[in-house]
Image 1 (spheres, one colour):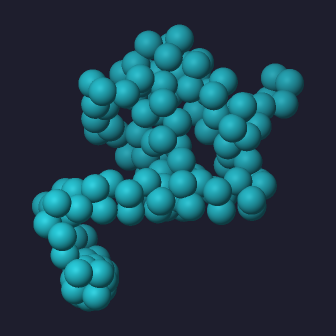
Image 2 (cartoon, rainbow, N blue to C red):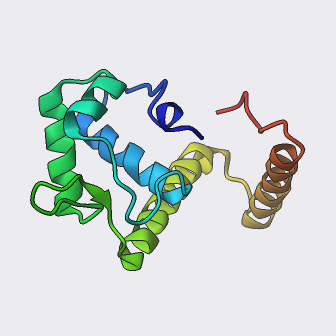
Length: 142
């Protein structure tokens, strides 16, 4: 993924504060490996322009990411993604946990037996993985 593509076509929802959505975007990029430990990230102004958000919103997102130790800013040097492996594990766990909770909430009313649900998830996961490996990307679903 080229540098410009990393921030292209980000759609923000109207439910959550934009700065928190930016933090989540960074977490997702870290979890997928698009952002690497120690990697220099765009300045606050650059990210505001790339994401088409207010520079104050970008500043608030960066402040939040610094407080969560996702990024490190030392003096006048550019901000970088943390090198702390514990933070990386925490991000991955948080994102997976949130996805599982959302999934379970969406199927709760169907009352599917656990064994059946796990088998369906295994099958669909394998199918999506096979599609990605064959170049189909598994796109076109939510």
